[in-house]
Length: 346
Image 1 (cartoon, rainbow, N blue to C red):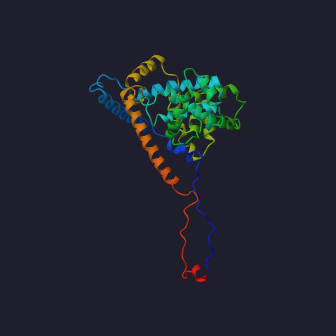
Image 2 (image 1 turned 120 degrees about the vertical axis):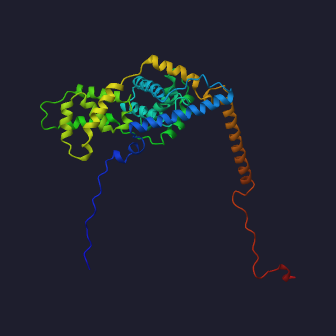
Image 3 (image 1 turned 180 degrees about the horizontal axis):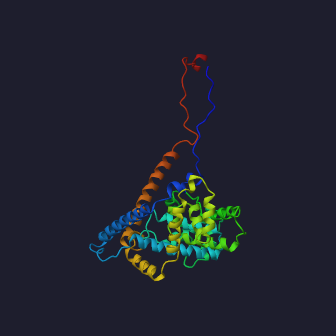
């Protein structure tokens, strides 16, 4: 009998990030992102145009609908609002970065012509405080934000969570930057200790990357390394040279692309340009979302009709259950083979 081999086939190493939902479901190429946004925009325009024409034939001919790029510009403005609110509430870095990610992902499934970024941003931030274990009461949150009621946040919470695919875990570049920073301190040829202000400068570049599509295209470690390279390119290159695994073989090419993205697009949008986009949005917003419009009233009536049907079905089902004995029906008495009759006593 031949001996049983104890050799096992070596399994390829899978990095934790590569096994994450972020890597599988929320990472795209530049072309894929453009296609997703263009497709969403075209579909939304077609639906809204049809609704305009249904309400009033010919009314859509003079409407200037938003383009996909203009939608991105408006979302970018509200990313800067997240930063302001996090500063006001003193939320940690994790909350801000997570809320920004949620907002970006939401608009890969929806358009601003259906859902205005203001309330979506507020909901994404509130959701991020919970998923990162930094909760705040809804009353405290909405009380300190002008013209905001609790329902403005709660009404969209399920929609936002659903659009995220209920995938709340996010891998962030600022965490990767901290790891790189610690690892670089151990470089054998590092002549002097790096000052903390250099880390802060690199962190600012990571924050600037949140205003770009970087996190939807590149890995957190690539973004972090690019941010560090913008501050100390030589040390960053020496650190990369110490990494011999295939994971880092093509990183230098990505670094330059990310650095260009951060320096070119990692800044707040022009307020006047965004104001013009927002003005046009008021004219091309989905009428089903505009309170008081014919489409809004019709949608509400349809929702009420469906809800009434559901209530009626539930009531009928409940009535049928009430007619039955809650402890179950009494079993019919079975007669035996011999019928013992009391008449035999007579």
